[in-house]
Length: 543
Image (tube, rainbow, N blue to C red):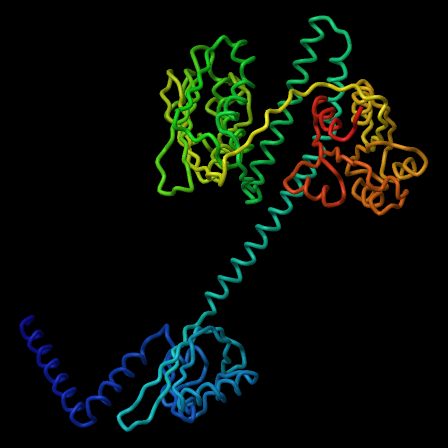
C-alpha cells in the first residue's frame, strides 16, 4: 500500500514538471517566471503587493492587498492607483513621481506613507517600489506595502508609557525637592542652635550630649543627600564635572578625615599609592571623593580590630589621552555572607537586617558608589570572605590635562572678627533666623533680620547694609523676586550691586545655577555648619 502511494506521488510530480515545461514553451520563459512569481506572492499574507502599468492602472492585486485596503481583486483591476488608495493631498505628487520614474528612470524611494482604505479610513504602511521591464519593452511598477498599524499602535503605547513614566519621575523629583526643603529647613535650625550651644560653657557631660546631637543631625543630612543623589542618578540628571585635580592630594585629604575615628577605634589604616599612579588627572574630584568616603566609611563602620588599607594601581589603556587607576579598599571586618553578595548593590538593603542589627544605615552607600563609578566610566566589584574581611575594587578612567596642573596651597580657615559689618538676614523660619543671626553676631557682625522679601526691600530703602543673606522660599515675596528687584535698582542705584548670598534648603541639581542666574552672588545650602557660614562671609566682607 505504502509503495503504491509513493509511486502515485512520483507520477504526479512528473506530470507537474511536464506541465511546467509546456507552459514555458507556450508563454516563453520570462512570462512563465512572471506567472510563477505572481502565483507565489498572491498567497503571501503579511505583504501587500500591487502592480501598475504606465498609466497607473492596476494589473496585479494580491490577497494581502484585498485584506489591507478592502478592495477585492475584481474591484481593483483596471482602476487607477490614485483613485483607489491615494489621499487627495498626495495625488498630484504621486502622479508626478511615477511619471518621472517611467520617463527619466528616477525611482521612488521607500518610506512610510498613510494611504486610504475602501471605507475611507487611513492605514499607515511602509511602502517600497520596484520597476519591472517586460519582454515587449513595457514597464510595470510594483508596490510592496507592509501594514504598520500594529507597530504604530505599539509605538504610540510606548510613547504614552514614556510620558507617564516621565510625568511620574517629574512628580517624584518635585516631591523630593519639596521634602528636601521641608526637612533641611528645620534641620538647619536644630544644627544651628546646637552649634550655638557649643559656644556656651558646659561641663564634660553636657559637651558629650551636644556632640552626639550634632552627629545625629549631620547623619540625617548625609542620609538626605544620599537619597537625593540616588534619585538624580535614576532620573539621569546627575551630571559629572570633569576638571583637573591632584589625585594623591585628594586621597590624603580623605584619609585625614578618618584619623580621629581610627584613633578612637584603635585600628590601623594604611594608604599605598603606587609610584606610577597618575598625579594630575582630569575627572570629577567631588564624586570620586564621595565614592572613596562611602567605601572607607563602610570599612570603618564594620571593622572593630585589625586594619584598613587604601591602595591604587595604574592600569594599561589603549589611548594616550587616558590614564586608568584601580582603587582598592580592604578591611579586616566580619566579611559578607555568600547569600548576600548578589544584593550588595541593591538600594535599601544591608547584610544584617531586622531590629537586632549591629550597625545603622539606610543601605544606600554602595548603591550610590556603583552608580557614580559607572557614570565616571568605570566598574566596581567586591571580594569578601566571611569572617575574614572584604575588599572593594573599582577602576576609573581619567583624562590627562593638556598641561601640568598648578595647585595653590590653601590657607587654613580661621574665624575672622569683623568690625561691625552690617548684614541683612532675610529668613522666614524663626529658629533658623535666630540661629544664623546669633552665629554672625558672635563673629562680630551687626545683624538685622527680615522675615520675607518685601520686608527686606523696605529695610534696604531706609537702612545701609554691606551684605544680604537671602532665603529663597518665603511668604509674601520670595528671595528670587526680591533679588531681581534689588538688581533692577528698585530700592536704590547705590545698593543694586550689594553682595547677595542664597541661604536656602533648596539643594537639588541646578538650584545653585538658577539662583546665580537670578543675580545672587553665592550659595550656602542648609543645613550648614558655623565655619561654612563664616567662610563664605569672609569672601565678601572685609575688616
